[in-house]
Length: 427
Length: 207
Image (cartoon, rainbow over all chains, first blue to last red; front, side, top):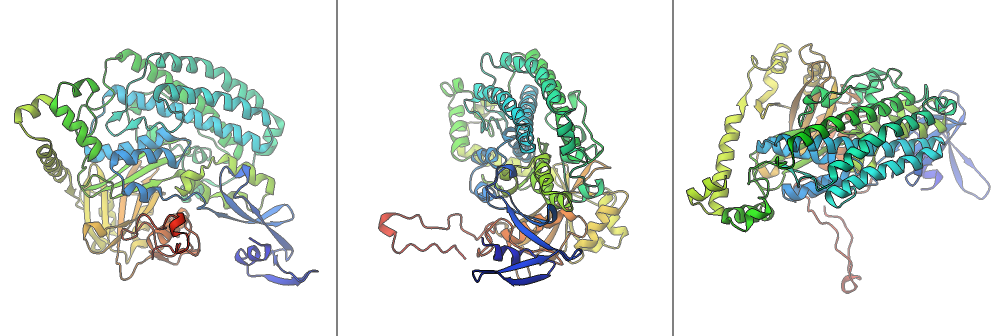
């Protein structure tokens, strides 16, 4: 897009002046309404590494100060909601992994909660604990990616490599479980696809014991680092009222001092049985968002440990999925002996199941905030409508409020601090 | 489970039909109409003189739904936000619904899924929107965060919002025709290019 087009499309102030420059090209200069000074419009993204995907920001600058920030999204819009309407409930599940591609299991759970609410299915306790364990591991993996890229944006290169190393351990745990590193679809309507394979629990235990020392290491690298504090403290401040009015959720909202965590407020999947604290900040800035997420590492590990204990106490024989054959496939060994099992298996994977007519909301606390699925059933085997509420969409909406009037370099820090994923925004 | 089915001697498809009927019965039993006595939100709206705006008030699977006319939707949402028994200060989500497949009138619904941080409760407000006049007042004056989801509904459903500050397409390109999440919009739009149809390939998106 040429400079001329940019200038005309993004000047809501209306104060423009055309100037002839050598070569015959006409450039429109925008005047800052307050200072009457010329401003410059630059394009940040969509192919800029520090915008965490394909986010495009049109920044109107006066010197180095951001006068106006206009986000443009939609570059990653793949019509996932439309596609889900045309797949059976079981098949639509795999798309939930692919919208917010850094919190796959949390998305699975939100979708499954909505479908299970429609179907009125009870999940066995062990299945619920496994879901909790997987969700918390996912949160750790997602926060590790956030920490690495956020630190890299601000200039702390080495943190990135350590974070990647640790995230890979979580991905290996997921790979051991399912054979897939990220998009496992392991949480499915009715429970889980299967129980933990041999040696998996030991591997999780190993990670739970290994990771606390690493959190300490990240804290020594950053928390009291004068450069880090200088770049983050007092930057990207948004008032509590604004944050709520914009619909922000997750760590970004908790950094403003609002104690909203759906795991505590509206417990799902037996979260009420776990003992953990909610990290809350008070300064509403980039530094507090960092501190909140660092504390969430520790709390997630606490939950993982408790879930591990509960699952181990239940033994390997306890079921991880519902016995309702209308929604979960029968065990493999039953197929050899029971005609009914064969029929159920066949019907489930060809036709699927038919939830009753109605709407259901499934909401979980994802790594970025409230991840909610609004599923509408018309009684057929496909969701009539599956709406994905991405927390990043609402968090990103508040970005202009956080960066306008501040320096360009802070913009990058703020984008990192709200931890957006463009797959979550554009879907 | 398996034993029971064998004893009944039903075939797979019979089972599916029986299952569907059973599920439908359960759903009907689970769905109940809300009265102003049972629902604080309903009561608050009646107090504010907006009781006539509500078409259906129901509870389904422990979730409350208020379906209302679109005329005074901003007043309704303001009551929901400000009334001491409601305090829905967080906009959880706004979405569009195209009810073409239900053969119901009116065709569209704009759904406001609200969450109250102080009272820890949820409600769903649905506003009915006609196909002939697909407009509704914007909620961005009530919650600033309503701006982008409303742009998304405008883009993907073609419902426009009166008084919206910046109503443009948000997901699709600016020059796109049609609204992809409408039920009459086809799933596949563009013809795939092969050597045999490379000349007469037209890449016009469906209207």
